[in-house]
Length: 513
Image (tube, rainbow, N blue to C red; front, side, top):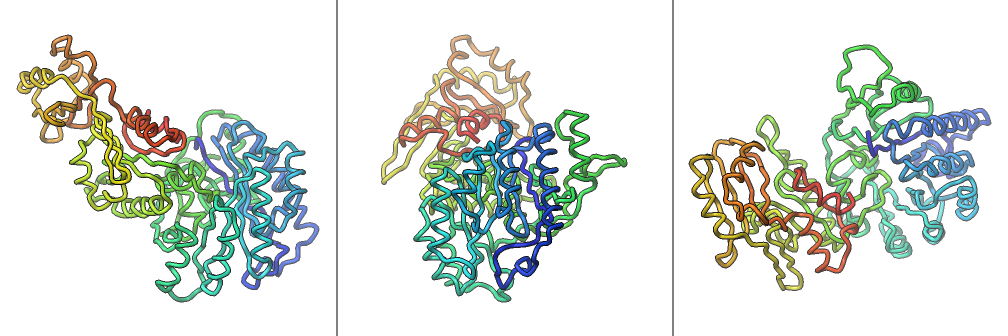
C-alpha cells in the first residue's frame, strides 16, 4: 500500500447547517455522541501515527457525515498527522463554516504543517452566500492551504454556480457533483453549462464498472474500526485495530490476500461487492492513469494536478493492452480519451512518448492526433514540437554501416531488419521476429558481440517482445522530455508522464510522478 490513502469517517452525524435535503442537519448531537466521536478519532490518530509508515500510508482525508471541522479535536488530530515526515497530505471535507483564521492558528500551534493541509469545500446555497463562501476560500489560500470547492449540480442553481466560479480565485477548481435525486436526465444545455464550470463534469455522468483491483492504494476506516475499500463497498474482514496490531509486530510491507484461505487477523483486500463506482469517492480513488494524471498521487483530495505538459506512451497506455481473453479494455481507452480532452481544454500541451516511429505512432492514434503537439518518437531518436503552425525537430542518427553489419546476421539470429530514416539518414533499427518469438537478454548480448567493435559504441538496444530496438546511446524518452521542456521553457517537474515499460521508467521519474 506504498503511497496509500486513508479515508476516515467517524460516528459524527450532526451538522450546524440546516440544509433541507440532508438528514444530518436534523440530528442534534448529544454530549455522549460527541465524546464518543472524539475518543474514536483520537484513538485512530494515535494508531495511524504508530503504524501508518509500516502500512505505507501517505495521506489522510476525513469524510464525515456531519461537519467535523467545527470540533477542535479534528484540527488537533490533523495537525499531529501532518507533522509526520512520512505523511504527504491531510485534509477534510467541510462546509467551511469554521473560522478560518483562528482554526489555522490553532492548527499550526499544534504542530500542523499548512502546506500539507487539503480542504474539500462544499458550497450549500441554502445556508451561505456566494460572496461569503468565496471569501472563506480566499482566506484559506492566503494561509497556504490547497483546496477544491464544489456543489451539487442542481439545474436551478446554474446561475449561482457561475457566479461562484467568477468570484473564486482562478487556481481553485470548482467541481460539480451530479444530482442523484433529479429523477431525469440532464438536458444538453445543462450538461454544457456544468461542463463550462467543471471541465471534469462529464466524468460524473460516466458509468464506471467496479474494479477492486484498482483499489489497492486506499482504505476506508469507520469510527469503530470497520474497514472498506471505499465508502460504498462491502465490509472487509478484520478491523483497523487488528491491522495496526499486526503491522506493529510484523514491520514488513503490507501483504494483500485476494481470497484468504485461513482465518487470521489479516484484512482481506480486493473485495468490493459493487457493480459500479457511483460517486467521486469511489471512482476518484481508483489507482489508474486518469486519476493520477488529472489529480495527482492522491486524487481523492479532488485538487487538480494541472501539469503544463503531459507525455504518454502509446502501446499499453493510450492503447490499452489486450486482456488474457483477447479483448481490449475499451472502457479504459474511452476514459483516457475523455481525460485528454479535459487537459486539452485546459491548455495542457499533450505529447506522445513512444518507441514507435512518427508515422506509425500518428497512424495508430489518428482519432486523437489533433490533441497532440508532437512528442518523443523512436525511443527518443526523433523529437518533435508542433506549435503555432510550425514544427521543430531533432534526430539522433546511427551509422549506416550498422544496418549493413546487422543484415549479415539475419539468418543466424532469425530476424527481419526494419529501418527508420530521415532524408536517407538512419536513426532507428528494429530487428523483428514473426510469430511472437521474444528476444532474450542473452540473444541480444550475443548479437551485439557479433558486431564489429566500432559499431557497438554510441548505440543502445532494448527488447520489446519480438522486436529488438536499436537507437543512438544519446536517445531515450527522458532525454526527449528534457529537450521538449527546454524548447517550451518549462521544467520537467511541471509535467506528467506515463508508460508501462522499462523504457518509461526514467521518464516518469524525471516528471515527478
